Amino acid sequence: MFKFAGKVLSLSAASLMVTTAIVSAQDMAALEAAAKAEGQLTTIALPHDWCGYGAVIEGFKKKYPEITVNELNPDAGSSDEIEAIKANKDNKGPQAPDVIDVGLSYGPQAKADGLIQPYKVATWDSIPDTAKDADGFWYGDYYGVLSFEVNKDLVPNAPTDWADLLKDEYKNSVALAGDPRASNQAIQGVYAAGLGTGGTDAASAAEKGLAFFKELNAKGNFVPVIGKSATLAQGQTPILITWDYNALAGRDTLNGNPPVEVVVPKSGVVAGVYVQAISAYAPHPNAAKLWMEYLYSDEGQLGWLKGYCHPIRFNDLAKNGKIPQEMLDKLPPAAAYEQAVFPTLDDQAKAKEAITKQWDAVVGANVQ
Image (cartoon, rainbow, N blue to C red; front, top):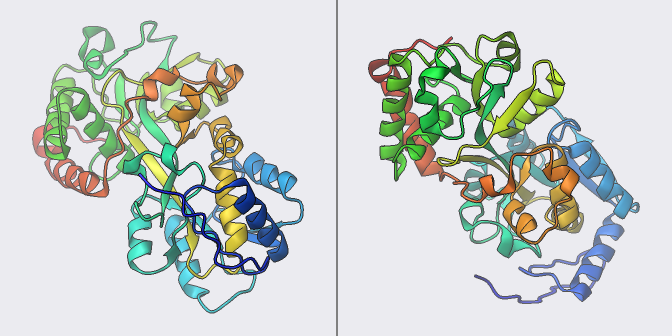
């Protein structure tokens, strides 16, 4: 896929630029020295309770105490991060972010706008091709997959695949975690159902997904309510189609009252991914690269997994026995994620267009 160039443009600790796909021990030492000389890393939009980021940041600081982590606006959204880069193009002060963590659609646009710079981490090969820019401008960091969050008090036999949801035993039980005419999570739920029932591309998955929910609704199994952990616990929506990290966090919050099972379906495993990138105007470019190396190391990836966000290298870590058993025990089986599909932006756009416009006509359920 790529070759290691081993190219160091400058050996000056203050201006070292490593442009490799694979970082050798020698280059890593030089990168560490350059980053330490810069002495600071500025992040943005990283709340400590999201995806285990609090522990991840502490892990980086512990490993590199010479580098101060300056955290900007933890509650910012992806568009705020992009605007922060634009607003600070000529500013090398503490308000200029070095790195961003944004929704998938923002990566290609930021590249097109010249706002980010390329860098390929040492573990580049183990990042799925469909979740990264071939030139290294942006790369998937973690993802969730659509799952079934199940109230075990009311549903003792949890469904294992999309087709199961049509069974008579699930009458008045199944809900989406959003309105499929407006919510991305719900739209992806319909898309996943379509892939799980014979869809082969974006168009057919959207068509089959709508047909599936039409049948689900006609059978009386679909509940036209925006499902949440509260509605699941109350029994209004005992089977909730939602991102697995939300389901797992909801399970922990409910703390056994009621008991919750989180199931990744056997087919139609659709992943929603976030991406990392380095600002083209980063005041601390080497600290930014070192941060990326940490995030994509086994240690950094496992930090996200502790927060229930599946790291982009999950399959590689699982295959090589790198995930502690106590961590695996809190998750659905690792094998369930092996067939995760990462829809392209074009796939998502096509599915969204079809599902949002045809839901009322095909399914006829007013979700609210």
